[in-house]
Structures are given as structure tokens and as C-alpha cells.
Image 1: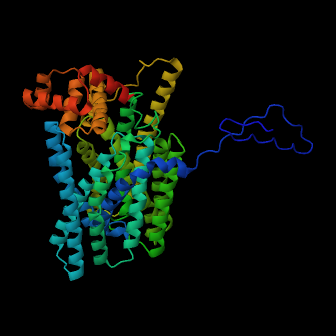
Image 2: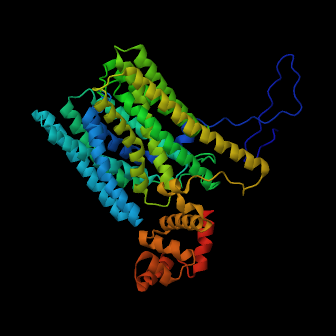
Image 3: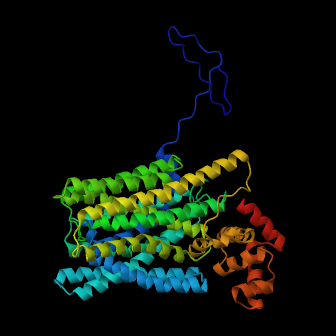
Length: 537
């Protein structure tokens, strides 16, 4: 009788040895097959509403203000409108900075719904203008500014929902959304311009059901997926190193964004039209690279989203420069690499904004707008400067030299910082000395980037308790204000101190604490602390 394995399954007989090969006395057990990419991505399927929402928000912006990438952009309707929109954002940015305000969930939802409606209306308005043959510059420019501003804040909402998540989840989320939006944009290029605008308006409205759908799914921060310690999301290991990563990346993005602005309008600042083959080549290249990046992230290639992605983008910038020089009569060839670089920078900037939102203590919109200033602001300013100055001193050699210099500078800023951080990590691990920290970054830069609050042990504890309180609030259906109260109360604040911190009356604070006890079925502060410690771990 064959022996049975645990569970009742009969044991397999050993296979006959191959001819001329002696059977091994102790054969090693067969290794389980490595999980497929689909199996590794399965826990991330709940991201679909966020992916579709973000892709639809971007599609409205690109169709209305970038001409669906039938050319590198729409010139002044793209970068000029973006500069005006950024000035409008600057006012809100200053207010958030001065007041250190944090927008509540209700306010965020209201802002998002209004921005989605405004995005859809402005894109549809551009569709009517094209359908009726309206040629008024002022009207079209105003609609472009409005669409740029509103769609940007719709995009911020979807990025905000992903804060606090892991490396893998953030990377898959942003690159999936990029792929989905590129497919939408490519299909729209086959439509008349007016029809494409109406389709884009419908896609913008699709964000409404996605908002409802997203609330019913597992939240990104609750998805169990790998985070790498030497990455933007590896905050728990070393806050100082994480901030050095983020600061170095912000400067690198700024330098590279200037290059992108110059490349998109090479050599005179005007848009570069695509031919059907080159437009298809751009779409396929963008989708292919994005899919490859996601596959590498899922396979836990640790440096893909740090050194790897920057190396890739800088290589695309160099290929664009070479193509412009090699094919001066066919600039659309270089535009393929330029627009692919621009699209990858879009996804990477989304990724970095999520990282800043997760690490910093300010309101998420602070980091979203700051990311727009660094990335799109630098791109728009360089493009506008090229358009204004080229007509006075046309010099293609100088433009090429300037772009090459900026590519080298961005490489130096980012890669040398990364090498320094990796060296410090290795030295700490070898010495087993956690107190040996990386060299401090400029305190002024840290404060400007909203990363200063995490420097002290007390603020780290407060941020950690806030995150734990949010998790507990989701578990027991606590309101947003109750989560605020719970986070402070669990830190040891008295009811009076909680009331002072939240600008509410002591009676209201007492009522919130009573409701927290009732909803959680607990009876003391220690019960709450014990549960928070267990739940957070």
C-alpha cells in the first residue's frame, strides 16, 4: 500500500532514474513554481476605479489643451494656459502654507465634484466652439485655462486617495492609469476634433461613478504589497534618507522638465505635428515602457523607481536630441521620444507626489500643487522662453548644447545623491549603528517641501498615531472628526487640550470621545491604546 501524505493524498512513486545516472539517495523536494505576474497583480485589481478615474481626468486635459497629442502640444493653449492656471494655484498654495490648513473629507469631495463638472463643461465648450467654427482666441484660451485648472485638481483627488500606500501599489496605479489614458487618447485621434472633445467630456464625467466605486473597494493603503526600504515609500526605516531621496528627485525633475519643455518645441518653440505612423509609434512606445516598468516593480526590482526610471528618462532625452540632429527634415521622429519622455514624466511625477503626500505633514493638495510647480511649471516656462527668444537669435546649436547640459545636470543631481544615500545605508547596515544618520539636508529646503515636521521623535509618533487612528476609524466607521479626536486623545491629550487643538468646545470633545467609546465598544483610554497598538502592528 502506498503511504499517504498528510491530507489523504497518496504519495507519488519516484520516477525511474535516467539511463547511466545513479539515483540520488536524498532528492531535494521540488521547488514551487514562481508566481506569475498575473498572480502578483491580483491583489491590485481593486485599484481599477482609481485607475479609470485618474485616466479619465487626464484624458479631458490632454484632449482639450494638448490636441490629443496629434502633435507635441497646442502651443500657447497648452503652456500659456498652464502658466495662468499655476498662478491661480499659487494663491491657494500660499493660503494653505500660511494657515497650515488641512482640508476635510467633505471639503475635498465638494471641490472634486465641482472641478469634474467644470472640466466636463469646458471640454464640451471647446467641442461646441469647434463644431460651430468659432475662432475667437480669447474664448478658447479662457476655456483652456479653466480646463487646465479644474482637471489638475481632479487629478489631485485621485493621487490623494493613494497616499500612505506602498511602492508597488503606487507604481502600478500611476502607470496603469497612464496606459489607460494613452489608449483613450489614441482612439480619440481618429475622431473629428469636435467629437473628440465631447467624448473627452463624457470621460471626465466618468469620474463621478469612479468616486462611488472607489469607496466600496479596499483602500490602496490597506493593500498588502511590497515596499522597499531604499525607496521613496520606505519611510519607516529612515526618515532622513527618505527625505533626501525626495529632495534630490524634486531637483532632478526640475532640471529634466526644462529639457522636456525645450524638446517639445524644438528648435523654435512651435508644436511638432505627428504623422499617423509616428503617432502610433509614440503610443506603442509609451505603453510598452510603462508595462515593462510595472512588471519589474511587481518582480521587486528595487531600483526601478529610483535610479532606473531616471536613467530611462534621460536616455529618452538623449535619443530625442540625436533624432532631431539626424533627421532635421523629419522632426516628428525626435518627437516620438520627446512625447514618450513627457508621458513617463507624468506618471513618475504622480508617483513622487503620492510619496510626498505620504511622508509630509501638510495637506495633500500642498504637495500636489508643489509638484505641478516644479514639473509642469519648469516645462512651461522653458518652452515659453524658447518661443519668445528664438525669433530674435535663432541658434539650433546653442539650444542643443543647453538641453545636453541640463540632462547632465539632472543626472549629476539625482544619481550622485542616490549613490550617497545607498553608501550611507550600506555603512549603517555594516556597522549596525542605527544612530549613524545620513548628512542632513538644508533645513530651509526641508521646510519648504513640507518635510520638516517629521524630524522630531514626537512628530513621528504623532504622525504614526494619526495613521493608526485612520485605520481604526475605517474599521469602526468613525467620522473624520472622531478620527481627529481619537488621534489626539490616544497621544495622552486631555479633553480640554483636544478641544483647544481642534478649535472646538470641551463639551463637543467630550461628546466625540463618548461616541468613539460606544462605536468601538471600549471603556477606557487604555483599551483604545491596546487596540491601536495591536491594529497598527
